[in-house]
Image (cartoon, rainbow, N blue to C red; front, side):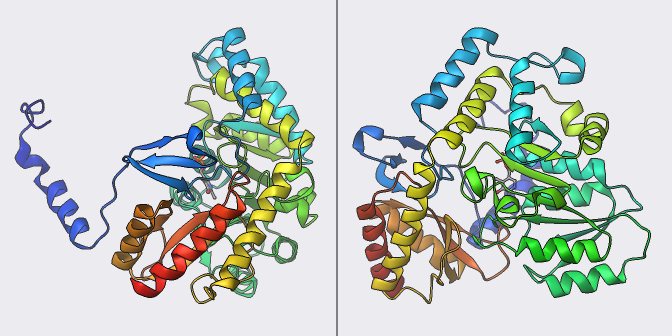
Length: 403
Ligand SMILES: *Cc1c(COP(=O)(O)O)cnc(C)c1O
């Protein structure tokens, strides 16, 4: 590789090299590893750089990423509309699949209108940058997803963070903001590295008391919580009081991309102001076809959702059977289950040992999580079998006590 790059003065790259070396030393170097799904070897079977394992690191919560219905939706869309969408929607027009998908999402989220985006990351950055001006105040949970943090930072709004799930702290912060300025409270529903979630009804009440608008990111709740899998806003009965409900097709829904649902006036505002919407080529037909099929499946086959929650309960029983509560506090709240370890090097060592034993459970280290809170992150899927979950617990019990 260096040979091919011989035209670049390598000394100019020395700073990056040194910083990477520092990361390596601190046990914080990240790299992408090859992963191949091997369905012939059973449900959730993969090979991670050649090592066969059961995948506990995928957000494929309902096991739909290879579902024949989604594949058929995708293939049909490609055959009808081709592979590329060729331009942004404002320049190149909007494919009817987009309009169909947005109508479906609006109904699904009990909102007036909806808009789709290429990815959840892009959606959050674009939405927050658009709805927040320099005179606005934004209040965000300290553990919000990086895309929400980046959106707040880019917006230049007055940005305040409250302690994780601490609504008293949120109220305190809101009380300090001037009356009359526009305020937004922004939170994940299910938190991506902790698997917990706020009492959204209480959160909405606090926000309303101070005249603040609310935006909720349902990336890890869509498809799993609420009636028909509509999410936690629906489950808490606050869909009509949350101004923006954002979520993704990329996790439980087995596809790609994101949506936001809310009042028409906000959708119109986003179409006019959200740079990530305006300046990016629209989603391709293959992605749209899969998303539409996933919404059909969600409506028609609640059995997947039930199976996922059965698996959550099975893991809970495994934690009890092996006395793992010190590492995995009960009760479990979602399909994301952190195994709290603390030390980064130890987390990596246990993750590697698990992989060698046939379980792919990713270690999550700072800065993705706060300092000294490194953890393993188990992600459950409806596709996991009882035996796979039970044997993961047995392997964890040995490694957590020995490593
Ligand atoms: C994954 C995730 C996103 C980003 O969605 P992508 O479609 O993967 O870009 C946004 N918010 C939360 C809470 C997430 O977990």
